[in-house]
Image (cartoon, rainbow, N blue to C red):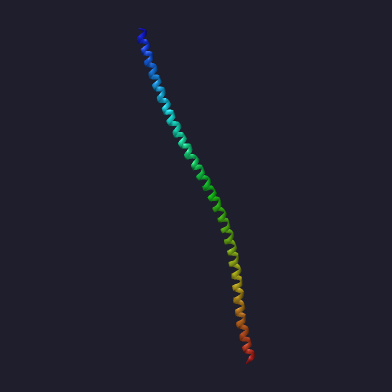
Length: 105
C-alpha cells in the first residue's frame, strides 16, 4: 500500500513539476514578448522625438516665411505709391510740355 501511495505521490510530483515547467516556459515567452514590445516602444519614442524636432524646425521656417510675406506686402504697397507718383509726374510732364509748346508759338 505504501508503494502505491508513494508511486502516486511521485506521479503527482512529476505532473506538478511538468506543469510548473510549462508555466515557466509561458512566462519566459511572455517576458520576451514584453521585451520586444519595449524595444519597439523605445524606437517609436526616438521617432516621435525626431518628428517633434522636424515640426519645430518647420514652424520656425513658417514664421520666417510669414515675416517675409509681410515685408513683401509692404514693399508692394510702396511700389504702388511710387508707380502712382511716376504716373502723376509723367502726366504733369506732358502738361508742362504742352504749355512750353504753347508758349513758344
